[in-house]
Amino acid sequence: MITYEQAVNLKHGDILHVGKCVKTVGPRGGVTTKVERYRVASSVKTWVTRPGQYQFTVRYGIQKTTSVVTHCDADLLHLESECPIND
Figure 1 (cartoon, rainbow, N blue to C red):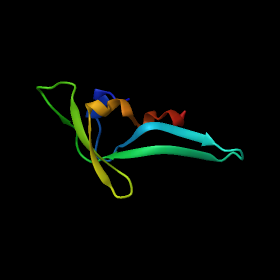
Figure 2: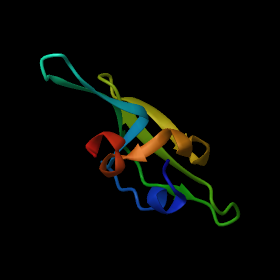
Figure 3: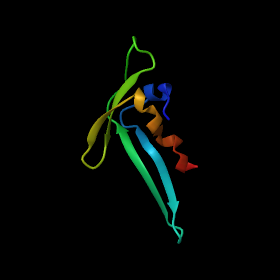
């Protein structure tokens, strides 16, 4: 989950992971990771009249699809540095 403070400090080009990241070790020791990465494509927009709310644009996929992320999506995202498969 991404917090308000983390979201406000995001910069253009920062990487976010979406959903659950999975690391699988095969029978012969091969490691496979399944991670959906989003790249921040804009600055974070905040409002004075609506504290705690934010909005920013992300890009993902081969076609560089663009999507808007809001505070409602915070529970789906985590920072690349805080990914659970890095442990």
